[in-house]
Length: 436
Image 1 (tube, rainbow, N blue to C red):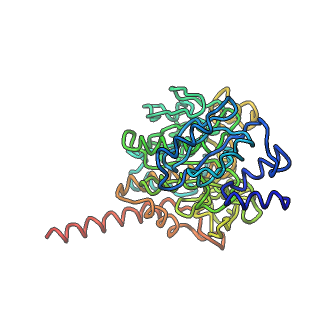
Image 2 (spheres, one colour):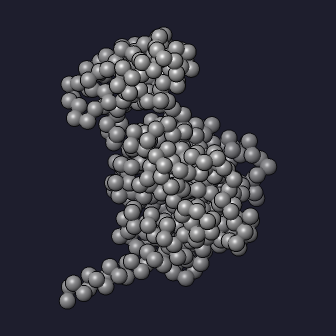
Image 3 (tube, rainbow, N blue to C red):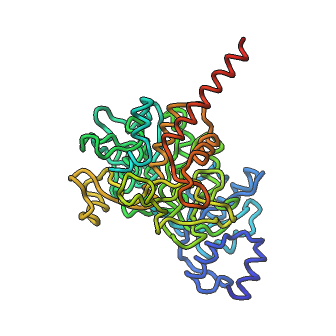
């Protein structure tokens, strides 16, 4: 950043996030003189306590032509989204309603032996648990109505499309369908061979990424907001986010991190992929940088049921976070995971050699580890519906196998579910004693 640019940034009261500064530089080469009609997608966070009249004035000043407009309010983070030109950003950056302006930067999408390897198959056998009655929202590229999700009954109980506004479930990319199967596929098309941890859990598909697997921060925030608004109607308890973007600043200021935290504090369990930028340190993306939510890293199970040869996958992003927090919070298998295929999708066309038995496809990434973790959580909630998000996170961390020598451990579904059951029994015993 040049001296003039630095002065301009400081005089703006740090109201422009580093991502926006970088984007202005790319578009205009000189932030200090940034003008023109090139449109930049932005998120404007309003000042806490901002009056309606101030917001309305800002809205009027921004909505002046086809290049400058605010489209939608995102109430969960007190923000508005839209597009502005560099010249308009310069004009409104000091408006009394504004706390900060963000670049609405791009976001991208980050089971054969897995089911037995993490202990979820044993949980189902020993405790008659399957995720029944628990709902997982998969915020991704959509969900194809695969037989493993619709047979013998349709477990896709709702679908919301932020990208194209469609009402029927579909997945033009294929990533989201794979993730839904990682969590809750029942193996209907494979005689039970390719089955997720929670094969009777309900799925809510929220399409926040396009057919190429991309989107923007605001798309994900809108999806999270929709889940919060419809939490009671569909019984949404778990959000699975196998996506992310580079983290430029603290979780306290990052808009996607703040949205995920709002969902967590509203009682929803949020699982987010660490990212696939390993093995370099400090590569955790947003929203996974948030210390409240559950950040999931990927393990490589070496295609064996035994855990002794497992290791952290080389691609799995490492901590610490930009705020120097230890992350990920838990690891789950993420390498060479076989799950549901969305036919005629981008993934099916680009990875034809990875298709298995016509109905499944093999993929790797923290994207796969995240819904596997979500599926285990569904078993925990079925065993003990009274668990809070903080309870779930603590149990996962306490029962994780410390196989990797640092940070938190490797997910152990059996130990996690059994601890959840013991907590339920202890609570019941305490209630009975108080009632005597």
